[in-house]
Length: 212
Image 1 (cartoon, rainbow, N blue to C red):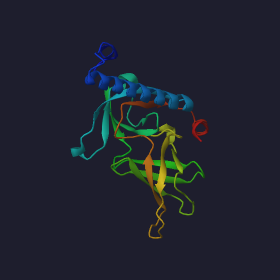
Image 2: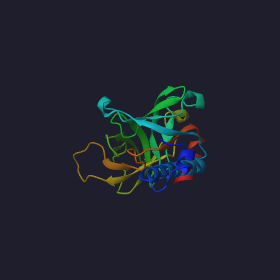
Image 3: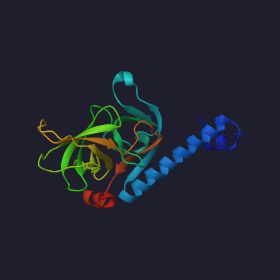
């Protein structure tokens, strides 16, 4: 990939340079969105560029980023982009880290429905879709309900209030022990250029007010 200076020196009549410019513009847009989200939530973040997508052969959904322990990143930190939740830090090295994406089948996160504060567990399904299972079967949910991260103790691994996704389908069936729903993640986990690792965050009430 070309640096910003190399892109500036390009012959703009060439298709290669036009493609490089589009990629650079796309990454700048993603970075701006991530910074906007972090600013509203008052997070302290480290921004990182995605270097590589994980191997499907290893049946895990991961990406490698270009920041690591030297930037203050640790395992089990929340990873977001300008749209919302991306995943969680799985492994850390001095100058890089591996992110487990929310799409991974092993990924689970506690969430709450913004409209009525119903609590559930969202699981990855190997795509940009997830499945929500409510803990309270008497609570009503519906299409387009917004899901936010409930948050973990001491914000590890998840800080509260992160936009996660929205409900796209609520099966009308009594065959389920718990109420379930299909969810689409806000972040496009198949097209990640720049992400932000949340190093620290304020308390849950402040973050919740920033997103609800």
